[in-house]
Each structure stands twice: as structure tokens, then as C-alpha cells.
Image (cartoon, rainbow, N blue to C red; front, side):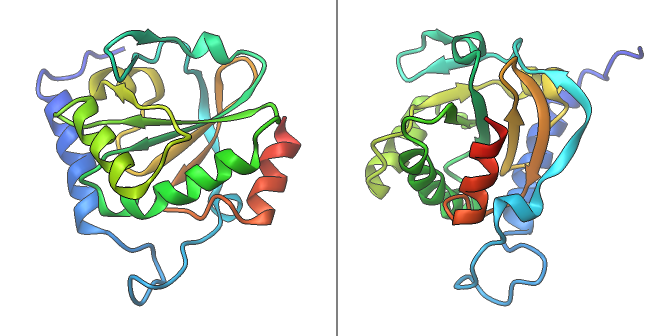
Length: 187
């Protein structure tokens, strides 16, 4: 395996930022009022499948959070940032999804990538009234080496053992009946 050049983490971060700003609407959208496509309609198999268990995550207090704590559950791991417009539009749908999945073997984990750490995520959650999702902060370099993902928003669906099995790239509607039924069927 060839090592990555030293500038890759910065390039990856810039790729995430540019994709989130340059393409704020999904293909086929004509204006910001258009509904995003359903998550189930955007889902693609992860190739190759990778273990997400080495993913570095910190909570709002800076404590390490392990994906192993979610073993036995399907994980909807959303990669987002408060400065990303499509991410901001998508997050309320993920919050409603989490409410609809309460009591199921599916958990929604929004993993934030923001240079301000938890401050930006907390501020966004307060502004939008989101109270049911955890504040989790990720590391871009670790994300790239663990799952090979860089674009925001992207959601990795992890199986009960922490394997990345499906990817939803771009902004999606998560709380529609079809997507909820699809996620519960995976559990």
C-alpha cells in the first residue's frame, strides 16, 4: 500500500468543504424548496466494506466514544458540519428519524467535522431545537483512513458488527415511511 502524501488530510478537508458549498442542491433540484430524495432511494452498497470500529469520535465534553458501544444495533452514521448548507437542511430529518426509531435496534449518530469542535454543533442544535441527537466530533484524517469517505453530507450505514455496508451520499430525506421501513428491516 502506498502512503498518502502529507497534504492529503488538508486536501480531504478542502474537498469536503468545496463539495458542501459548491453543490448545495442535489441533481434535479430546481430550488431550495424542493424536497430531498429519500435515503432509501440514494443508498448504495459500500465497496469495499470496511470496519468502522477504529473511527475516532469525541463527545461534547471531549471524552472518547467507541462505536463498539453500539454493537448489536444498526448505526446511521451521518457525517456533517454546521457550515455545510445541505447538512443543515438534512439534520432536522435525521432528528425526526431518531424519534421514529426509538425502541428499535437502529441508532442515529451525527458525526460533526468542524474546526470549532463541539461549539459549532451545539450552537446549531440549539438554533434548530434538536435535543435528541448526541454531539459527536470526528477527525477528518481518521475518517478517511477508516472508511475512505470525505464528502459532506454522507451517511454510512453500519451493520450490527460495525461494518460499513451502505452509503447515502448527499442530502437525503430520512424520516419518510419508506426510509424508516428500510432501516428497521436491516435491524
